[in-house]
Length: 313
View 1: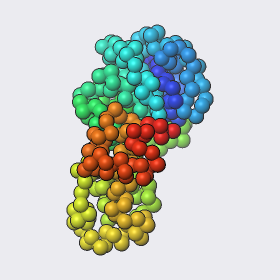
View 2 (view 1 turned 60 degrees about the vertical axis):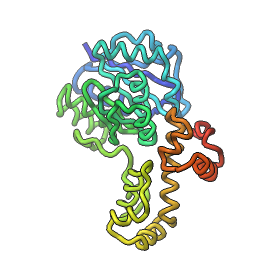
View 3 (view 1 turned 45 degrees about the vertical axis):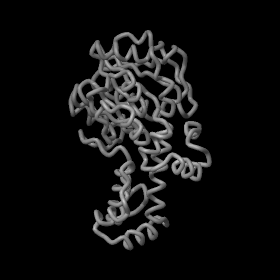
View 4 (view 1 turned 90 degrees about the vertical axis):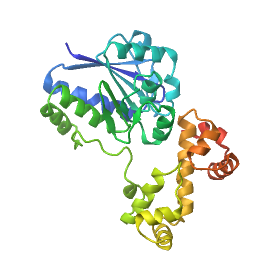
């Protein structure tokens, strides 16, 4: 019997994440016979539109998902739409029955909300990781493209599910099959070594000065417990004046302005993807007062923090 894989589609799910998870199964069947079957389910049995507006038909609603061997929650911008009692109940039932549970992009939020990720390592889309970590302290949230841990597998979105599924195929079938699938998909594998959840700072900002890259990483890692610029310069082993020059030369910004921008971007993501209060978000991003945070946020985004969820697109 083929392994039955059910994909739970949440409105505005990521199409590329879905097919990155699905296509390795299709190609695997070319080499291993009908080793896998797959189906799509939704919360209510109706077709679901992806974030690109393309509707996808499903075979059943969540209440008729049955007992698949694998169930993968596919979400993206609107994971809250899937965080309902019926979905949580079914995920808990599947966990009790030994189903391998997965989540791609923000699909991990559904597993977390159901409590089936507690005590496990997991990841999600890099934009949502701060909110994920703040919202679910019982989960070991890691910054990786994908994680497979004891009956749970999560991927950060985009093409990351492709590596996750190849790793899984290698474990349950053979590395030879996984490599054949990767070759057919013209994909270079990160063999059993998930990469960073986000493109490295040097590539993101098109900079190659290792001192500046290290400074940016320090700032990204210390948003809540805000570092002084003296601390950053000391860790990078340059003077404060040299740090200023590096930021001006490569980013046309002051270190203070860049650090503030990072904190506000983190705040925006926390407001959009977590249920933290505005005050808690202010504290989590290094602002000493709510008034200071509100002024800075409005200056950056043109709206007060309370409207942040309306900014997600």
